[in-house]
Length: 206
Image (cartoon, rainbow, N blue to C red; front, side, top):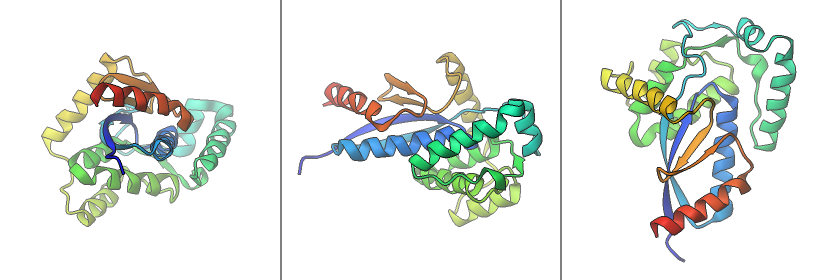
């Protein structure tokens, strides 16, 4: 068996963004389809709601303010796309839209456990409808993985740097993937869309 090529991926995302979870699943499927690569994911912070107050806000108020009468149809479409990606979104269980900055801090504090933490947060929010901005929830999650919470000032500065980098790169929405520091895909595209990018990166780093 030939050795697989490891492709570094910077993944700009927000943990409260359903398209980010969909995009992650499609990226994972693409890697499995390709068969010749492994992915080394670096989580990069992006805030859909940078002005969100620390206590978050009512989910109903948030959806009404952001989408108005189109909110129900928007989330129905997301749920349908999620089903195709193997995700059973439970949007009706979500009661609060949180400030996601502390959750980002926990992910970025986690080192090689970052993906595990992110998956737990995605599941807590989108499947179980929990408030992932709640300090108690985040403290308990950190404790299970032997991590510190809240994040250190170093991590908070890293989050700010990610936000600046996203602005500098012109990133206006997530998910946003950067492969090997040079090739980018914006959005939750079909798995097949990633395959030529994988091949191009392999050609550059082999």
